[in-house]
Length: 265
Image 1: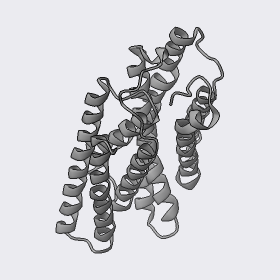
Image 2: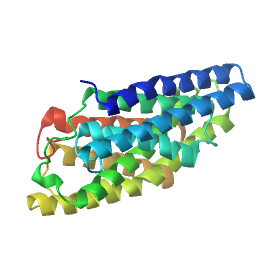
Image 3: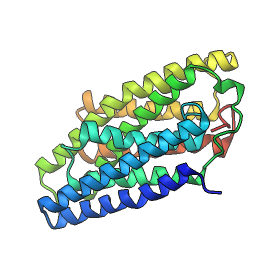
Image 4: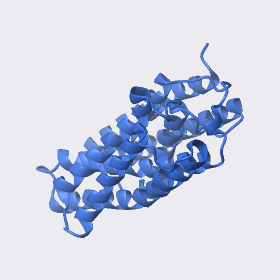
């Protein structure tokens, strides 16, 4: 039987999709009407998305952070929130459309792994550190998603756009990574290590998901080092940001593929 959360998400998906289509249409045929229409649709999709998150919280009687469905539900919602608060007014239309596409893919991934909200929690999940670790890790990865979207458009338009446009995209990538990296560090690495110590008796166990998270951290550390110390910009920097987010997605789903201590999600 389809749950209320799934129904809401299935309604939100086409609303977000129409917003993305109108963004693409507006990029080809500029106009204030098209611009307002996509934004209204995006906000409507986000309201539905928020309702799904609230419904899941009520059904689970807890903040929805415990498995792959809930993680992707929260992260996809956070992509919308971060976009609205920090990036909506500054992103070119193609990047905004790409952000919505990433959001749609995350929702689709969440629905694929839908889980019963009433199932019993594993003992390791009954910790206040769960909320700190998961919320900050997902929020940091949300900024990486924005950087990924801008990086893809930068590479696609590298031969057709002017230097000012490409520099703007490069700055968006840098801003997103520089905002997401410390949040990801605090949540995935620091809070994750503290929680691991309390749950499993060791700060680090070389669990597959721990190791993959470390790789993600190193990729973005390399990006920031090359950007700030070496002055690397443009396509090379964007390529690193893209690799980082692909690795992020693999890390999110890594426990399903490789098992380990994070095999609950």
